[in-house]
Length: 336
Image (cartoon, rainbow, N blue to C red):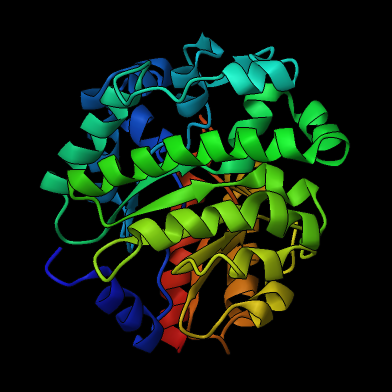
C-alpha cells in the first residue's frame, strides 16, 4: 500500500462514502475449493483464500482467518481440527498457580505460527491496493484458553497475582507475534479479545486493556495499526476498550453501534456489526440488504464508522448474502 495506515485511517474518516471491512476469510477458502483445515495449516492455501476474496469483493482492507487457537497451540495446548470448522482448544493446559509459574513463553517456531506468518507475508506482498490486516488473540482470551475460561474468571478474584503472571506471559508472546507480523509487511493486526467482554468495565481494564495497551504502545505507529475486536462487549466495557489507545475498534452484534460509537474518539475507526451467523450465514439476501441498509442509515452521522461483520463470518456463508451486504453499501453510497 502506497500510503501509511495513519493516512489511510484519515482518508477513511474524510471520505464521504462509507467503506466496508467485513472480517471474512472462509468464503475465500470456499472460492479456492480448499478446506478450513488446509487453510489453517498451510500458509500458501490461507494466502490464496485472502487473495481470492480481495479480487472478488471491494473490501477496504483484507483480513486473515480469525483463528483463536494458534497462540494457545504454540504454548502447548491440544487442538481439535475438523475439515470445515474453525479449530478448537481441547481441555486446558494449566490447572493452578504452580502451572502458571512453570509455564514457558514459546518461540515463534512452535505449532502453526510459521504458517500464519507465511500467509501474512505472501498477502502483504501480493495485495497492494488496500491494507492487509493480520490477526492475533488478545491476552485475556489467550489466558482463558490456557487456564479454562470459567476458571480464569474465578482466578482473577481468588488469586489476582497468579492471573497477572499468566497475563504477563501471554502478553509477552502476543507482543513477539505482533512484532513478527509487522515485519511481514502487513499494515496492522485485528486483535481478538472477546473474553474481555465477560468482565465489568473496571475488570476489563485491569485484566485486559492494560495489557493490550502495552502491546499497542510497542507496535502501533504511523505504518501499523491495532484493531481491537471484542464481540463479547454488550456496550458495558467500551470505555475499557478505548483506554487501549488502539487505532480502531471492532464491535460485535451484541452491542448497539449507535451507543458504543459515542465512546470512540472521532480520530479512531469504529467497525461493526452485522451478525455473522443470523445474517451472513443464516439470513436471506433480502434480510441482509435490509439490515445492512438500516445500520448504514443509523450510522450516517459518524464519519469514523466502517461497515463490518460483528465477527469472523463462518464457513459456508452464502455468497448471495455477501453480495447483498455490498449492494446495500453501494446503494447507500449512491444515495448519499
